[in-house]
Image (cartoon, rainbow, N blue to C red; front, top):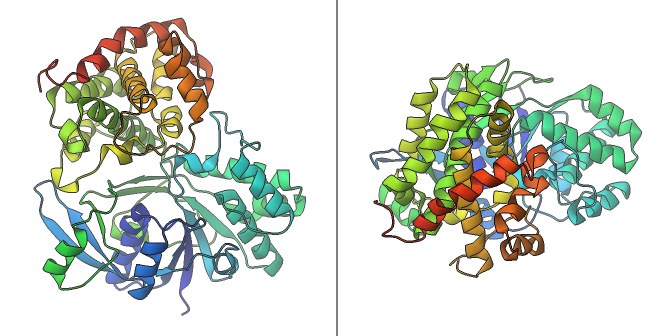
Length: 464
């Protein structure tokens, strides 16, 4: 039997440590009925791509347990699709009848959606892709690439297709679908719009595995452990979780055989992960950078920073998530323990990236819910104060790395930092806070939390 195909857009380290690893597990179990093709829709990973192609698309996955035990696994379940500006190879594969799933990881900022799921059609990236799509060409955003694939698939009568978002985006299937349909509508291709409505599905999914940027020492460790000169290894934590809504319209791999949780509703798991893990991850990054740390594990071993994160999890987030199918207290403890894994060497710079895209999904919903309940937001306000402290460091040129944030408007952010009242300016940003932007209770709570951020900026001010 000819294998079915998955085409994945976005060949980053997380995909290679997560989705590709799960398919590898299925292959290793004897089920080779699905193949995976992966490629980038934007240039930027030419060196990794060249290394993978030279290695026949194979690479080593190095997993690190909390006790620093390392395990090495050869991954050969993924075939690399070389990047080309016109995305011709990816489009052809995505449009092929054998392809039943197109999945993607493009970071939270890659969807250009506001809190109401409205597509930012005026954004230069989206505007450029709309022009390209109207001309029958592929673009450089996820919407431009998917539109080109779906249009070709419709023309070839290739059958139904599942679109599987694998980014840390709340309700990621529904939201990415909303953005895609708005994009297609703006191209004026009503036939394609109707076809997508009736021939595709977009399951929600929750993904979780800490995957730091590649370390310089990883190839040497792989060589010593395996004897293989690997120029594109991936390192990640031992923990892995993938919870997927079972709403596939044209078949799927038997992922449940290798640990994937196929469920009717992802929301309870997703909310816990996004509000507890992702939000506190950002907390550790901002606080750690204020403290002068380079890595997440340093902050996760600092009693002052752990206290801030734990207060937020226990007092603010957990009451918002009840009732839950998870043991939230245990989940929170597990998260904090995972962050303390020094062997990962996960950088604060990596985790702090794209904060403007993360906050509306990770932190704002909890603050909004607590405000609506008339409850305390002290924990959430502390995180906002840390973020403001981090922004002030960036504005003053005091970061020792180039901050990357696709959703940030530098001039607007500098205006916040330089304002007479930076707290009021930050709290008034509707793109971050939505309907409670400018709320007097919110502003007051953040103002009260400022000493927390200020104390972290002085290494000896709080006990570590």
